[in-house]
Length: 466
Ligand SMILES: *Cc1c(COP(=O)(O)O)cnc(C)c1O
Image 1 (tube, protein in one colour):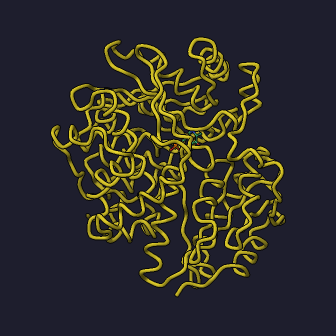
Image 2 (cartoon, protein in one colour; image 1 turned 90 degrees about the vertical axis):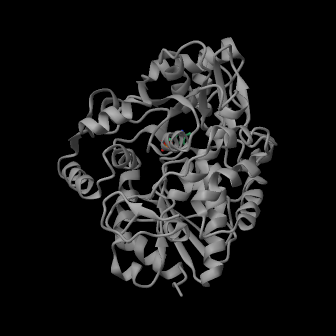
């Protein structure tokens, strides 16, 4: 399988190449040259497979040429062996139409573990082949940081530097990062905001003093391998609900458009999906783009669902490419316009192509709280604020009553105890396996909010590339 850039100017790479690269050198995102497609019979034959085996079936065409089926199976078995539920992503029925797909049974209690547990192992596998060393640099306001750290802690060929804004992540989220004491994990609290941290990371990726000596990469959802791993649970859920004979709709709490794009990929591969509901909060650029074609960034309003508080959705570019005739030169032009003015209009083909599968809905903070209370009262389920936005959208989307609607439960409620308690009156308990989080030793470096301070620290601690 070959991968091409959405902006048309980067060399095509194989799976190993795109996994280690992250972003394409022309600023675009990698997508497969064409979508592998399963017949209805092939999909029917996947029913009942254990999750790791299903993952091998779905991902095999994407890794072809870079991993043997045996290597892929080994990596999937290890990655999904870290989950605390036998089904990996169990499906829970709420009523006749509504279902929850619990994606939070991984080590750090958010859906990002599903992809990052595999990505950490893919990195290690490819690096040992080339006898190289990787330096991961990222900024986090919450879930990505802890999931990435857990995925690479203790791995010989990888150093990870994770920046967080001092005093502005929750205690649970900070401790999930800072209590990992492996020598290759470097947590940095910076004196500044998340945007300051993010700007430092971006600058480091174009700083020749860093890139000349270290192989640096990102672990955010622009990395194709993450999206690929997320395609699997769409198949897993739909198969349980009767696919391929029966269509299923999904409601996806959305920020960077990575998770819901994985649903789009599942549809391209032949899974019969009735609708993909893009659920946003009041930071609703995607809702506006999908409902009226207006993709224009405003300012971010902080909410109780921080992983959805964004104004630019990186992975949306992949959809615009695929539904805009796969014209890299035209998309590069469109994205240049967006980067200059922070606004753009979707073309007719992008709008119509998206409308064939996507619906969107937006939840206010009040609607999010009501959805948490409703789930507790009517379904006996405690859900987190992100999942609540998904459930609100699922119930508001007007899907035909004969079609099951699956809301992706993206985080464990115990990650957001204050919001959950405010809505339901009950404090959600941390699962026993992470219950001693508040007794563990923390370690992190506090640095001033200047780029030079952070860069010098990274250069001093990282291992140069081969
Ligand atoms: C990251 C995250 C999201 C958003 O997912 P995207 O792939 O960025 O759209 C939603 N909910 C939770 C809990 C998350 O951690």
